Length: 255
Image (cartoon, rainbow, N blue to C red; front, side):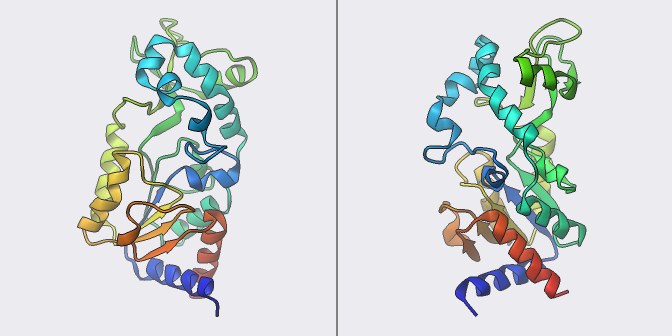
């Protein structure tokens, strides 16, 4: 048996033995679906753009047209993307009772589209838009075709103000309800699986520390090192999609 096979077996055993397991997913879990992350060399979104110029609350308030121009190809990519083996394997493990909560930094809804439930979107969602003038919250779906195809910026049907997507921009606080749910889940967990997150964006990056403080074990599946690696029970610097599929298959064989 190879070292890689032993690692998969150990990862599977960590999940099997845990009575409460949560997934903490970042952009790296969706890159196999064709959605770019933010920091990878050459392909990361922040390699081409200054985030404070295109994706901060200040820039949106001052010039929402620039934000929507930058956001449009990303929205098109997300809408055309499909869940990959990692999303599907996590969903299967959740349905089988091995995964309890999913905390995600992603706005692509690929966990939900793979059939997963109890997903806490701590960096917001693309599913709704909010009018910052009259504070109406509106489903985004009716606006997407014209925005993607023609660049038509969504406007409030009540007051005609440009709508803001309910995704968390730089300088914004995290949405209170999913953040609270995420922290409640972490206080109960025995195993936290960090999947495709570099753990550099705060305050989300603090969640593994909270898990450790409550006695949880950490399993890190990420291509690059993270600050929490020294505290992890197992680190798998491998492709997250192939790794989750292998772990799921190993768990199924042990049923």
